[in-house]
Length: 228
Length: 108
Image (cartoon, rainbow over all chains, first blue to last red; front, top):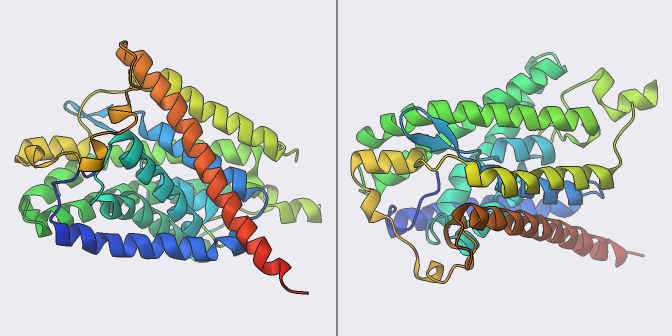
């Protein structure tokens, strides 16, 4: 869903840079409080994994492909604000080194593919933690559903930006974007759940629960181990 | 419960990411992604282009320059890119943590 330069009007691109810079900036401001010794390498490998997974386009219906965005995965592993930093590193690297995604559209791309998923899934995990039972199945289901929703929300926002730019009528682009991203979002959910399962199997204590503590309980939290 | 040491976790996760980017990405779907497909279908694909600073991209379109074999060029780009993103991410996190520690150190 990388928007190249030329798709967005200059004012729309500039307007989208504001929330992107704000979210990443707040993440940087907050990072000193949230980064501990294990989160430094975790941030590095999360960025590396998302970059790698974004190269792995999988086929969806009718001669179209999709790939992981990763904002949801980063949010569950690192919390929403560090996830914004991860996504900015990945998307900016793609634009400046690999010519993938525009430079003036960088704010829009960081926002659509990163910030929205990171903060949206962060909020979803917070709500889920309050109203749903805390166990592995619920945790992975919420993360997977959040991953799917983050792709749909990103597609909605990209459509709105394209419509606001006068590039294509919103009413034309929205159903087309949502239609194809319904399927791409399933890929996002599958990869996110698979990656989280691998982390749960090896280092469950690393999972941040989107910044609000792990939502998974008993056998999965370090607190339970201490108690046992 | 036995936990994998953080160093081992990091090495394994990075090896997985680099392995995927190097060995699997050359065989990824070459079809247009969702946005490109919609842009083609609804007639605005041609409005997209590269920014001037991207004309000299080090690794344009995930093809490492100077390698004729397309799959090899993609694999090398994936190897270099994934390692580079890891180092940048690690470096930024280390720097943010360090600057925070320096702030704390000024207190008696």
